[in-house]
Image 1 (tube, helix red, strand yellow):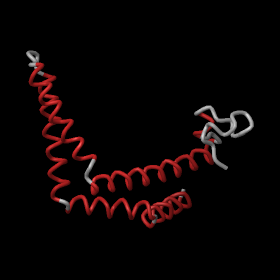
Image 2 (cartoon, helix red, strand yellow; image 1 turned 90 degrees about the vertical axis):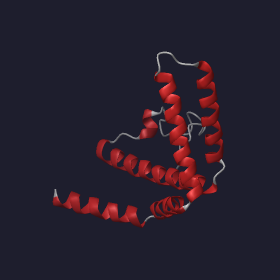
Image 3 (cartoon, helix red, strand yellow; image 1 turned 30 degrees about the vertical axis):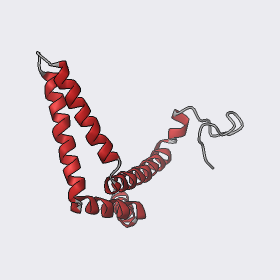
Image 4 (tube, one colour; image 1 turned 120 degrees about the horizontal axis):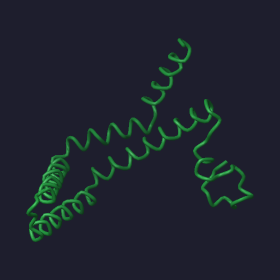
Amino acid sequence: MEKVLNQAELLAEAILESQEFISMRLSEQAAMKDQHANDLIAAYSEKRSNVENILADANMNHGDLATAGEELQNIEEAIDQNETINKMRETREAFTDMMNKVNSIIKYVVTGESDEEEAGCSGSCSSCGGGCGHQH
């Protein structure tokens, strides 16, 4: 078991040193320092909570819901246009993709099952012409 734990520690260190992890952390730090981004996120949370409260009310006013929904949509659009938040999203997605690949490799080595097989990929491009996204 000690060998497994040592290898897990080495893997964790490699993850911490990866460009995906470093980029993600740097973009998160930049977002925390960006007051406008923080204001947008706080406003989104407030507007979303408002919509949820209206929906939970047994005597829901549809006009209030429409107004709150529009306000929420406006904040979502502003968030989508914020470069700092977009960079953070992109780097988080890249990190998540890397971690999914790491987990798939571990799963394949331990169980012999790959995620591609579960998604209907036989591993042979002759059967689907490569349309499944399988890469060699």
